[in-house]
Length: 192
Image (cartoon, rainbow, N blue to C red; front, side):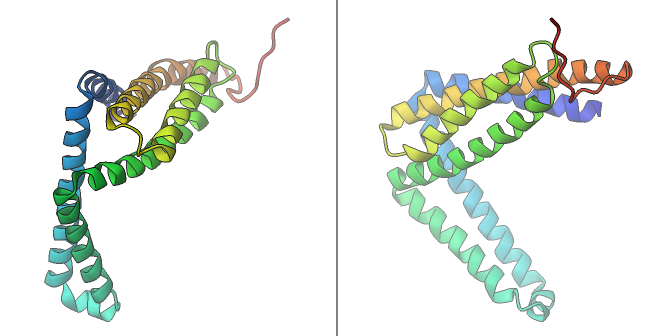
């Protein structure tokens, strides 16, 4: 449990760092993130090809040989296309990043919703909603000026970093204390 908590804290700090860098150096950070995306595609394609060619017999028996070979080649071709066409790479990267950001925001919203009855638990819901709004802007407006997109990405990562740290350090501790006292953390207490 402590290992998972430490990973969540590191994730929150990393998100804050990426957000600040993206906000301060918008053009450079978007190009670097796009390059990392290309390297990831080449790596995935190469690993898929090597894995398929090394273990041909298993894949031929499963009729997956051609599909895995095809996927590996497509990943490598797409990475090469992105390398030679940077604007296409940044646009595609932005859409994929936006989808990933939306997924993270929704999962954080669900975690925060569990802790809504805790004192200040509503802050997690608000932060995850703001993060989701920025993620949707990244998805639906990837073609706007890349500097603006980079700043949107920076704001998203800052909000999400704060949200991850808030959920990990505050909400989870409060929920643990409620469980220790035998209270139901999903029950909303209204004091009048």
